[in-house]
Image (cartoon, rainbow, N blue to C red):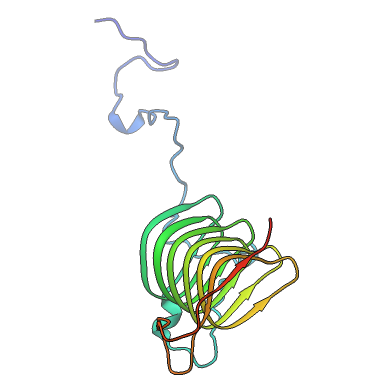
Length: 185
């Protein structure tokens, strides 16, 4: 019925084209942002190709898992080339390389070629080749390894067995009785 007319208009001869666009909280882009090319003068983070490990295949490089700090994972991990734990993992693991970083914790059964423990490990560890226990590392449970290196301060408690010649995953009953080791914490 009554409408307010903008200043300077009497209502005659007005058309839709003269009407101002409605104001919104989202400004309309002044140019096509999708088709716009990146500006070379603005620094951007450089995206580098993933580091290649000599002698590794492309499939192995794609099968890496990092469990970051503050993340908790439960379940099973298999066919993994490298597993790095900075958070907490409760799982059964089959991997080529296994690493528990300082502050990381693992509980469960683990079958790996190499292991590097700098955090907490509790459970069964079958390390076919080399086991490294860092000065901040703590292992508790059943440990089987090919070679072992323990830094000063590293702690191991539980059953310890060395893989014999020709054995790949399990120690046999004919092997000498498992050695017991216990370091006070």
